[in-house]
Amino acid sequence: MKYVELGKTNLRVSEAGFGAFRLSVLSVDDAVKVLRHAYDNGITFYDTANMYRDSEAKIGQALAPVRTK
Image (cartoon, rainbow, N blue to C red):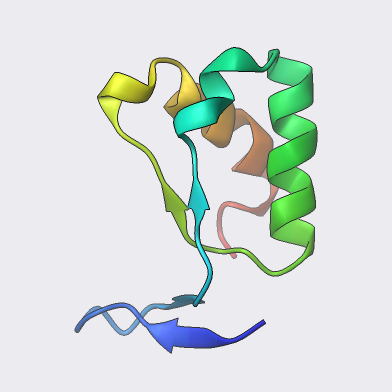
């Protein structure tokens, strides 16, 4: 996985991101599995928005154990 600096934030994120729009159709358990798989394969950039319904909550639950990384 390639990583790039995110603007002028000094944060390095994966060049490929995860768009969370479709998480709303998944159960919490399935969403957590998909998100952890993405993280385990190097994805560190996640795109979400309020209009994506419960995607923020699902991302928060899935990535809670690795949040500080």
